[in-house]
Length: 115
Image (cartoon, rainbow, N blue to C red; front, top):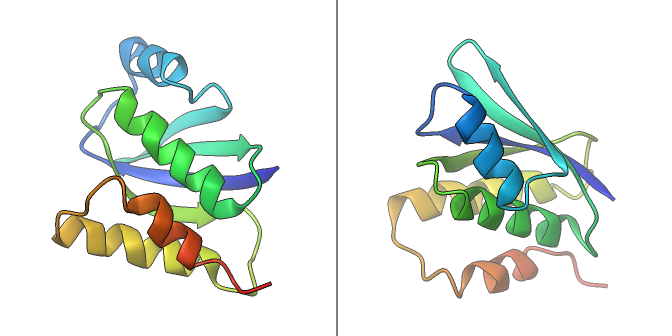
């Protein structure tokens, strides 16, 4: 089980329609919230790795079709290996260049420490 928060851009309000679409797209293990001008979703997602959990959550947000873009990932627990920082770097880079969606899982897998 991995706990993390996705910070979203592109939406400013959590209407019932938005939250319903997120739930229907697979974000039923997340709790959407809004503070000031920031919208996020707190997740407790079961997956083999943090990268897998984040990748599927980002996919589900996109699938909801609400016009949101994930701009930051925050880990609910401190991670001594810097996984969340690395994931944030990937998200920032992907905002600057167009990344083939098929490559995203590969990039996230490469960020995992060697066993």
